[in-house]
Structures are given as structure tokens and as C-alpha cells.
Length: 141
Image (cartoon, rainbow, N blue to C red; front, side):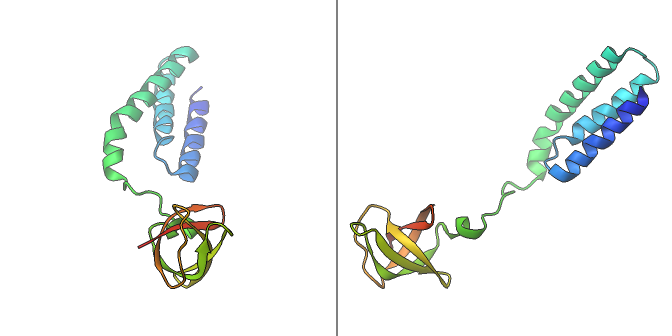
């Protein structure tokens, strides 16, 4: 049975490498603990129970430490999501009645609509509140 626990440990490590969430790692350690127990106890139910208990204890005991070590901002906004909060300029009047309007942000031209359905004239500086579909939702500075 020790070979199965060793293979499971390897599988959990590969999943951890792919996932990088520092979660599955503890199942790998639990598998190694169960492997050591399998040298002394032949009962698969006891081995499985020790695997589950040790993995759970390791997971919950180290979670506060992992939260301190890993950066809080693990996800960096990219592409269009990175535009939220940026300042731009209206290059074509934003008219909520006609549903037209364009802004220029970071050298790129985007379709836009106003945050509170107000008319925003050309050359007005705006801030991007959010993104809805392919349109930026903006309000004047």
C-alpha cells in the first residue's frame, strides 16, 4: 500500500505545481504520512483516516501563516479591467439619448457612456468608473 500513497503524494505535488494555491500541497504531505503509517499498519481504513486527519490539520494550522506570507494582491488587473479608475478625455460627445460617445485613455480610443446618463461634451476630462461589455462607463472629473 505504501506505493499507492507515494504515487498519490506525487500526483498532489504535480497538481500543486500547476495550481500554485498552496492548498493541495498539504494533501501531498498527508499522503506521505499515510505512507509511513502503512509500514506499521496494514488497515487501509486507518491509513485513509490518518491521511484525511493529517491533511486537514496541516491545512488549517498553516492557513494563517500562508495568508501572511503570500501577497494580498495576488491578482493584478490586466487588459480592459486595468482601465478602471484611470483618467481620460472625451473625444466625441457622450450623448445618452443617442447612445454615442468616445473617450481616449492611455492612447486608446474607447466607446463610452456616462455613469449617470448625463451629456458630457468633447474635451472634458473623465474618470472611468467601470466597464460594461465593450463600453467604458465614465463620469466627469
